[in-house]
Length: 161
Image (cartoon, rainbow, N blue to C red; front, side, top):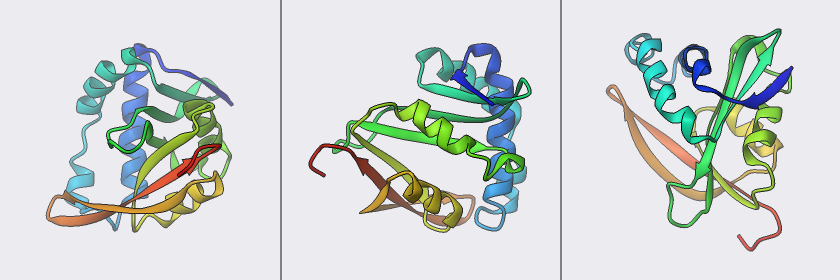
C-alpha cells in the first residue's frame, strides 16, 4: 500500500472511489435514487478542480487507487482544520487504509473536526479509534427527500478544546 498526494490525473479514479464507496456505505441510509444517480463524470470534474489546491491524498494497492482523503481549512468558524472526507472501497475496509489516509491528511494538526452521519456507525467507530470525539454540535442535511443528522467530531492534541 502507498499513500501519496493526489495529482489531477487521479481525478477519475478518485471520483470512482467516491461514488462506489458512497453507494456501499450509505445504502439504506441515503435514498437509493440519490445513490444510483451519482455520476462518476460529475465527481471527476469536481476532483479535477479540487486536487490542484492540495489537501487530497490517495491510497494505492497494486497501483490502483482504492481510497482517498481530503482535508484543509475548516468550514466552521470555531475550528482551524477539517477532515472533509475519507472514503475507501468496501473491499479495503478493515485493512488500515483509512488510518493511513487520516495520518497523511491530518499530519500534526492539533485541532481537527470532521462531520459524520449519525447513522454511519462504522465511520463513527473509526473516528473514535483515531482519537475523535463527538463535540455536541449537530446539523441536518437533506439527501433527496430524507433529512440526515450529522454529528461533528473533534480531535484535539495539546490544545484546549
